[in-house]
Each structure stands twice: as structure tokens, then as C-alpha cells.
Length: 376
Image (cartoon, rainbow, N blue to C red):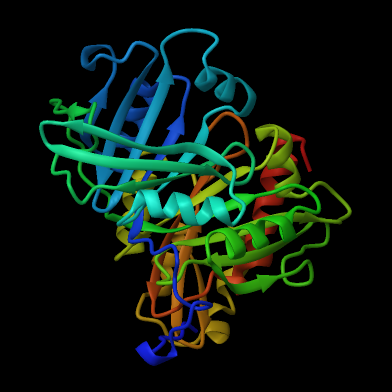
């Protein structure tokens, strides 16, 4: 439960030295950004927003920017061989490179994190065009993933300087996705403490909750997870580490195929998960399925809910409750050829938690998929 401090309780120790307004955008490095943009528009209901490439003066890469409510995706592909972007894709496959954080002061954000031990990705730079200026800076987090600090209070353009607005004749409708609820990172054996400390010491995050291998385990596999959150609670980063089990866990599989630590899944919020998942399924998105027996005792476990049980059962939507309410969630299968990145669709009805009561059923469903892939 978050605590609000009064003004006279604020001290140098508990002042939020890195205030973050929200997730600014997520940038994925992908093999073909034009085709990826078509996929995210068609399947996930994103809309055109902006473009950068040869037509805007870029010689080495092309980027499409898509939007749905408060979610912005940047899809970037190199235009030549031997680039850093291309090397990233060759090693990791398509995946999240940049988690951009919207801040009021990108210079101060950089200074505060660097003096606390961050590794620099980008010193503060000012990009300008006829619509104003944006200040950006950046630091590395786990693996080759980057946090960019984006300050845009003096900018009123469509996205960022160097991008032009994009309008095409293809406008599939939204599926009702609202904002990034949380984003989960997978780190290697024995690295959990390092990265929990990084988010606490370098970015000033606090630990909301912790799950160990007793909480998240099946007969075959296990993992550990800790959830880190910033001062105002708008940014939540669960971090997973593999734990010893009889067989290879989903975290180990990810680390093998991504070839290192990285973003495992992006959780996006909706106000009506039944409508959203129905539309996503109609558009070809595949979801993990739990056994039908999951629903036999569901209401006994979570109590009364607003939704009818039958559409939840039909769609495979999971339900869990905490002290403040309940949540509904479902997970896509990996959206890339490698079994790495996937999406979570979540609707919160007061709950602040992450679905602990669903872990066993969910991970057994993932194990069935691993068995089909021959990687369990």
C-alpha cells in the first residue's frame, strides 16, 4: 500500500529525486519496421502517429511511431548492415531496446542517476525543430536495455524533432488499450539483488512485493520475482530471476533465446478486458490457455465479481483478488519467432497486485507451450 507523505515529513532521504510522469514511449528494434507497424495496427489496434527515415534525412535507420490512447510504440529497423541496431537484432531478435520515461528535467534526471552509479547511454542532448525543443538523456539498465529520460515541456510537435506526422489510408480501430500498466524484465542467475539494488539506489524506486520460488513454482519449474515502483507509483518494473527446478523454466528459456537479460513482457491496461480480448482474438492474437478446471472453483477463491463467468471461461481470462479489489488478466503467446517477448492484457478493479493466485495455472500453461517447443 502506497503511503503519502505530508510536507513536514519530507526529508532528503524520502524526497523523490527522480520524479517520473509516466511512460513516454517504448522503442523496439525489429527486423522490418514497416511490416511490424502493419502488424501492430492490424492485430493490436494501434494508429499511425509519426515517421522518420530517408525522407526525413535519416540515412542509417527507419522508424514508425504508433499510438493507442497513452501508449506509444516506436518500431526501428536499420537500413544498412553492420549497424549497432542490426547487431542488437541479430543477437536478441526483435525486442524492446528503449523504455523512455517522461520527466520534467532530463538533465537533472541524468545527473541524479549518474552520481548514484548509473552507466551512461546518452549525455543530455537538445533536439530542436519548428515545434520547439526536447531534452533527452539516457542510462543503461539490465542487459542492453536503456532508460531514456525525455523532457518535452517546450515541445508541441507530433512526437519528437526529426519525425514527421504519418497518415495512411489504413486505420483499423482501437481494441481499447489505455496505458502501460507495468513492464517485466528477466535477468540472469544470481542477478536479482543487483538489479533490485539498482532500481532502489540509482532510480529511487521502492520494492512493492516479492515472490520467491515457493510462490511461483510448479512440479517442474520455478522463478523468483520482485516488483519495483517509482515514487508516484506510475512506473512498475517487476524483475524475474530463474530458480532451481526439475526442468528448464520460462525465464531460462527466455535468457537462452534472447541471449541475455531483457524485457519479457509488456502489460497494457484496458477498461473492458472481455471486449479487448475478444477483438484481439478475432484479429489473430493467440493467448495462453489454462485448463477448464481453473474456473470450477474460481468464484470460491476470488469471491463475487462484476463479470459473468462464461465469457471469462471462453476467452481464458484469469482473475485474482487482493485486499483492495480484484484484477482480470491474460497473456499472449510470444509475438516473435523466438519465445521471448509477449504481452499481458490487464483490467484492474481496485487491485494493486499482480495476480499471485494465478501463477501456478499460468506457468503450467507456459510449460505446455515449452513442451511443444521442446525447450522444457
